[in-house]
Image 1 (cartoon, helix red, strand yellow):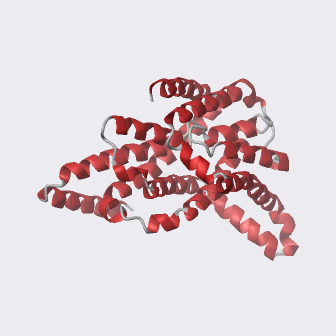
Image 2 (tube, rainbow, N blue to C red):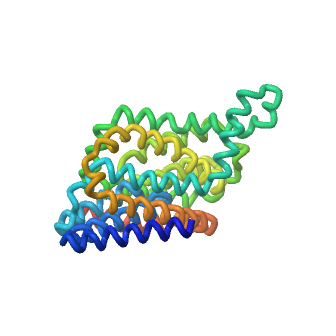
Image 3 (cartoon, one colour):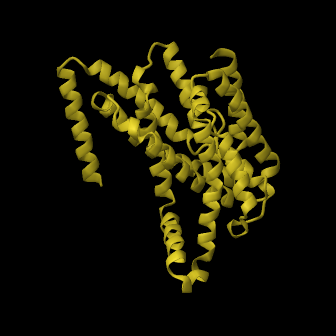
Length: 305
């Protein structure tokens, strides 16, 4: 792995040197910096309950006002790349559980005599499928309206205020839940699925809303957080697949492949680190920090963007 990274870095170095010689270094460096910043923002705010989509809208608006915005940043290519980076990081974190659940799901179907052994994990998979239905249906039906919301920073500011309320409710009432994963039921899956539906709007944190739905329903923080991130995976994969055609036909891949690639790696690495931060803060019952942050940021965005 270390040798592979060295080769990649050397390749970047020679590409940069080549572009410098051609007099294109300033434009390339500007693109790398902006894409890198947005990749870092996506990576940190995907698991952290402050809304990754909302922050991308806010910072893109700020870049526009500073005349630093790269026009191609609004295309679907960048969105697919950074979301894939975050998705792979989360899947890597849960890789052992994913393998176990996949094995249990298909073994339950293919091996009737051993169903009792796989029943618990198979039931968990079914609940995950149920939980992803609201967001899948909502995303399909309201896709145009959701896309329009991404061009409205003030709406994002208002949605951040809702996220602040969600996180405040966890701080006040959510840490008393005692039910573990084995007590997860259909109502928990539907409730968390409906909360995930709300999070299709930029500014409403997906992790924050689903944690609210789980923890206020009586789940302990570990059960709620794990189910929340397993819910994220199929919805994210579905969204990427729906945009794959536009991604493949995009005319920006050839010209911006290096900034895209850097943003992909940054997004993935920071998402993985941010997961650990979130889980530690959950254990310490410190999500109120993000509630205050979303409240302040939401007010500033509504007033000034």
